[in-house]
Structures are given as C-alpha cells and as structure tokens.
Image (cartoon, rainbow, N blue to C red; front, side):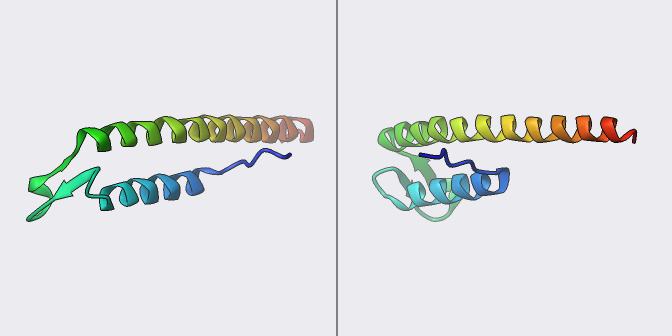
Length: 82
C-alpha cells in the first residue's frame, strides 16, 4: 500500500479545519460572549494535544519531502551548469 504524502497547504488546511471542529464541540471548548470568555476544557486540551502530535508527523514528512525536492533541483541545476 502506497503511503499518502501531503504537502504544506494540505496540512495547513487540515490543522485549521481540525482545530475548528474541536472548538465546535462543547465538551472540548467553551465560548460565551466572544473570545475573551473562551477556554478549552481539560478533555479538550488533551484532544488538542493529541491532534497536534498526530499532525506533527505529517509536518515532519512534508519537510523531508520539500528538502529532498530542493536537493534534487540543486543537483540538476549543477549538472546542467547553471
């Protein structure tokens, strides 16, 4: 089975969407009268941390992919004599 690789834009969208969805769950996040009176519950903090840990693995993989891509481009440029 081929491993699914995500790029930075996809990861950013997933993080934003994931946190936004967690915030919609009143068991995790509570807000009344605006952001000045908003807070994460203990359960919400735990789920948010778990989500960030999960997404950090994707971020690390995307950074490795980007570095590999740049390295290959540099080698090709050097071989072409540019």
